[in-house]
Length: 316
Image 1 (cartoon, one colour):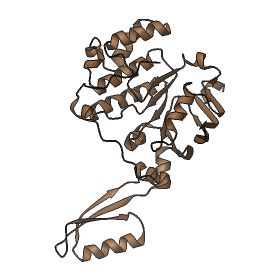
Image 2: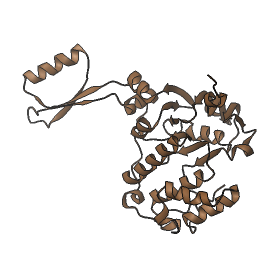
Image 3: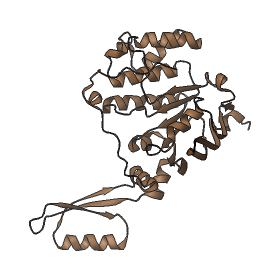
Image 4: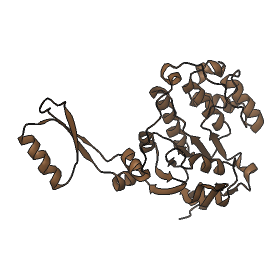
């Protein structure tokens, strides 16, 4: 059987990647591979080094040491050639406020020698047809995010970098973005995703790397990380005693001590409800990072679909 070497070569291969800013070592010798056609999640608390790593992979920042290969091309040595291979959606919405989605895509199509027919394809892919000619300053944050993704996909990148694409979006907008990501994978695109939402990482990603203080501290499938660093539990709602309020006791799902304690509470007639929870990626994340991290609450703009936002930076 003939095997095409391109089918087994990782889409992204990072080796001993380091980045220093003066005395601060923001990224500390990380090594990982991203299989072709996969969705790879890059997780970590704020300040862990995720964005710095992505900026090196996308050619916006030179590594201090180490190597990066994307689709067989070295970064940053082949940065110019890689522009046609990668797409990037940054963590900030750098759009031209007065331009419509269509005008954005026409501009970038001209810059990348992309056929005009592709514009209609990405507008349809992101469900933007009805808003294609609306200036982005009048769009909600969720629709603006779709414009960013459409722009990044215009030239059919083989590898697509998404930096927190659903941050501060309402649930409907976030769902539509996740559906688009899955469709892109089905079409053969490799996705490199950073996110602060554990459920998103758990449901979308084929593999994960968890970064903390510049180092990768865990890597594997979401299930393997959940099972290794978390455990299923039961939440027991207890009847109030001596005028105290109702309370909840959490116990490991397995083990003789949990069974004995639960049996005793049942005999005392104190158990009102029992709810089981599977091992969670969030618990594993918190245990690994020692963090009290919580996802940022949706902004008022996202909650109300208000379009009043700060003018973004110009595209680089």
